[in-house]
Length: 161
Image 1 (cartoon, rainbow, N blue to C red):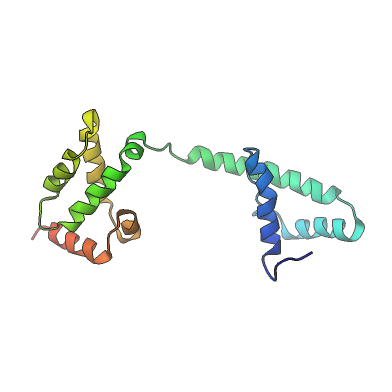
Image 2: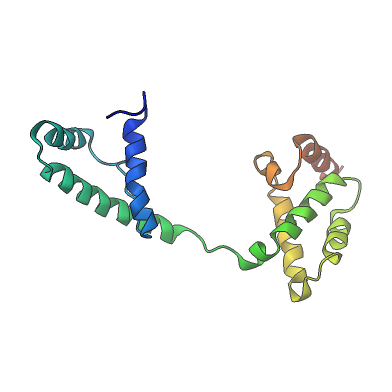
């Protein structure tokens, strides 16, 4: 009954969400379920072969999970279609600016963007590259294929003397 030495409960809870996710329903979480209520419900099934407590607990937990999931989902911002459409161009431009610290960033950006037919999006894509450069930090370097030493070198050259 216990296929793993550890994580059986977590694995079963994760597996219980598969049919929900496949049916495009909200996942079920037990984060706020009182431990005593869960234990009693499970013991009711194992020791008394009574499913009522566990069924009611699942219904209660699912209603609560759905409310929390939908509230969280509403709080998420819609993806920026421009950023999505030109994400590779933006990444390459940021990478090139950082890897060429001796050059003026705007010159490198203009050169990178000139290699693509951006049409009416050109000014907006340039603004996105500049925004990415302003918020660049060590936590996002992998996204751009950069090393911390490259960022440090570029940042030291950008600071006014």
